View (cartoon, rainbow, N blue to C red):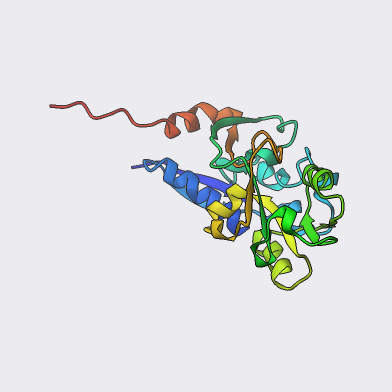
Length: 221
């Protein structure tokens, strides 16, 4: 009988897609995906710039792991707190599918095509700083919510463009919405943007690591 690993995930569509990506990466393992809302999912007001480096998007899932409700968690590597909670340990890090930032805009305009004063939505201090360096004439709007909620702000006309992780668009099948994908020399991003990290309890870390290890090839007769 194959071992079933209960994997904790945030409930957003993107987070579930990331958990499903993990499932496909380890086809010899059966995963049960358990969605666990975090403070970051419920609080749509606090600017991300105030909580970067904290456990804003991880605390509740990590607590579920510590108390044994789940066996493993998948986090966006860039969302990991600066200090992982005691008793937990990274098992494996999945390489980023794209480290870049992307611009989604009305009429598919690129950054330097946006009219003066255009409202550009983002929640990251890093992205705000990068935007102000390149287009100080823009109106930077602090926004929260998952990718669908952010795109809805664009569709409703509350903003004229938004900056998002290119990896998020890829995972959601929305890559065609990108008006522009910025090279790293133009927009510096978090060094782990687009990557995923799996974390387990220290007490069963070795067991989980062993389960996730690729099965040995069959010996020919």
